[in-house]
Every structure is written in structure tokens, then in C-alpha cells.
Amino acid sequence: MTARWMILGCGYTGTRLARTLVSNPELAGDIVVTRRDREAARVLGVELGVRGVAADLANLGALAVTPGSIVVCAAPPGPDPAREIANVVRAARGAAKLVYISSTGVYGPGHGASVDESWPIAPITASGRARVAAEAALAGSDVPWLALRAAGIYGPGRGLVERVRAGTYRVVGDGKSHVARIHVVDLVAAILAAAGSPVTGAVNAADDDPAPIGEVADAVAARLGLPRPPRVPVAAVSPEVAGMLTADRRISNRRLRDELGVELRYPSWRDALEDELAAGA
Image (tube, rainbow, N blue to C red; front, side):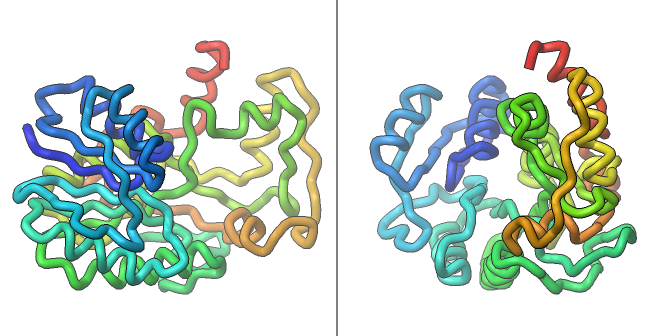
């Protein structure tokens, strides 16, 4: 699949996607990456060997999307997510596919149940409500679109290992709440699959092992030879953090596997942990 790509919001996930494309010329075609800051966009473009341009979803201006391109929006919601994504939809007219990186935060609490794409949309955090507004704006798209509802994204430089090792990680509540995750490598694989698939609508992007957060933190600490991280009451953290870590959702990835055909490199956080430790993380 050779295509033109425009990646809006090259932060952690967007930059990993761009690097993957650059390293696989048979996938890539022409690549445009964006950051809000003009200099940051230029530097990233030079580093990757692609075109880096400044773009703010609140005002895309004359940003042009080449007809037939794959547009990936990995930017986090700003103050007006509905208007921002409406701007993306307008700019993406003529694209082949629009892939939006959303969040499992759009769902209501799971109470330990398996949560698929039919679960009630009832966000309990500000970020979840912003994602709902953004997804609603996708409905105005004239091109096929897919919202990847990503679980907690982790990977090199972003995960529990560094925080547990530094002694700064705290388990919120009793640690029994299930928290779903997706390694950035597998999220990039999901984006690539979505770009080339006729599947549209919303698809959960999560691994096979939505384990209780306390179990994960304790296992990481044990592998590092450290005491288990302390528990803190829910009231000790912000409502946003509490909402994310106590929603107790076991996210189902059936559509990701069966319909998009994604084979997870890291089906469990345990697999990723062993790779991180082996690499000296």
C-alpha cells in the first residue's frame, strides 16, 4: 500500500507512526507531519526526512490535503474539539481515509465488565467528553473515517517502569480497577490497518490483558526488585486521573483483531515489560 500521508499532531503516537512509515518505503509514499509550533514542525520534518508544517486544528487555514491521501489525526483535543475536528473534516475532503485517534474514555464506567464498541457513551472525565465531541464531528466527513478508541498508550519512555523505578508511582484506590492498555507499536499497526481497510466507525484499540492496575504496578516493582508502590485514596488525585484509573473497564479488542486483522506484538503488558527490561529500560 503506497499512499500519501498527512499526520496531524505528531506527538508520541504520530511521531512513532511517521518513523514507521519512513522505515517502510513500500507503505509510505509522500509524508507530511504537523506540529502546532512552526519550528518544532520544521525540526521534526528534517529529522525524519519528510515535510514538516505548522498546523493548529483550531485554524487550519489553507492547509491542503492531496486527493487520495490518508489523513491521520493524532492531536489531542483542544478547547473546542467539535470545531477542531470539523476543520479537519473540511481539510480532508478528497482524502481516501480519515483515521482519528480517540480514546476509550468515551465510555461509561465498566464495573469490571467487558466493554465493546456498543457500550454506553457516558464519559466521566473532561478528556472523555472532549473525545465524544470530536467523534461526533467526524459524522460530517465526506470520506470514509475510522475512530480508533485507544486504551492507555504506553511504550519506550512512556510507561510504569520509569515511574516505579523512580519511586514516584502511586496506585489510586485499592488497585483492583481494570485498566486497558495498548503499546504504541500495536497502535501504529492499528492505524496502518485502518488506513487500508474498508472498515469504518469506531474500533477499540487495546491489548488482550486489561489487568487490575495494582497487579501491574506490583509486578513491575517485583521485576525491578523494588517494594510495591503505595496505594493512595481516590480523593488524593484529580478527578481526571481518578476517572481514568478507576473506571474499571476491560476493553474488548475483538473488532481490532477480527475486522482490522491486527496481530498484536504485545498482547499483554507482561510481554512488553520483559522486552523493556531486556533492552535495559
